[in-house]
Length: 149
Image (tube, rainbow, N blue to C red; front, side, top):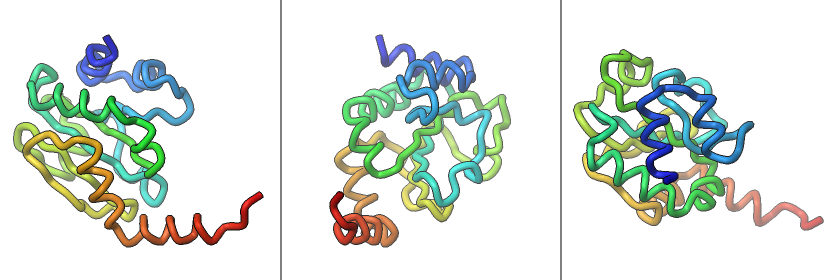
């Protein structure tokens, strides 16, 4: 049922529904990518952008399902998932990233495209890639050095 809800979010294009179905209204994990830009997340979040030409694309649905399995691992790494399955919307994300069909992209906090994959990836593969990023390694060093309260 949750999988259907996230596919509907991408199809309907309403960020309010996205916040409501993710369970965290002030900081949703899944966000409608047709109404946002990467600038909103610069230095704050690591966007995973998922593009498809149709919300019924099996790869799009599989990618969403894979990400839904471990949302806590994504949240731990400051990830936000931006979904765009409507090429007719001419979103800012589509203009900037120029996808062709299905693609999953990992964007670093500084706005650099780190990964561009034409097939779905599971959370384990994504988090391993994130953990190799220099900024993520610095965040972990800072967290370990922080005094325990």
